[in-house]
Image (cartoon, rainbow, N blue to C red; front, top):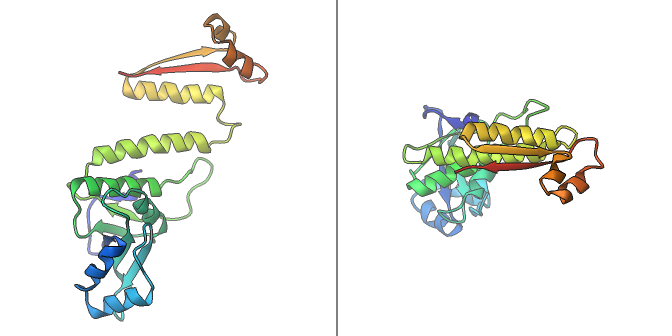
Length: 215
């Protein structure tokens, strides 16, 4: 997850501006004529999740990126932006309020997710410089939890059976000082869980009940 965030801005860091469709017109009125012409020529409407790179006049470099959002609470448009923008360093401009910046960070992290258990990702992801006002811990909690669930879902069944799922639960319990109890095979009958036993007994991998308790 840390690979989708940059530690600090540099001279090459590209400002990224979030805009709603109604807000785009007001923003364009304050921009240079060349910028307005480029946006209009691109038929860009700042629809949620859409991105547009604005080049420097007469130069082969990007001076700004635009991201369309639905409102200040929008998370998923930032995820779409992280998946669509080219490799590089980006920063929020203008700075966003704490909650909005945090939502942007969460969305960016979720959009940067890749399942890399069996192969190395080929695409270099864009990196976002998180503003100081963003709640980094909240971003890390939301992203790490979602990454874990996605990894478990994306792992094929031959590598993610009952035993592997129990191992993942125990690892999670150790990390957060929770209690994890696993009831396996015929012990399910003694624990009065016959339905789980009946469903799983046809497999060569013993069924189990995972009881994870925290707090």
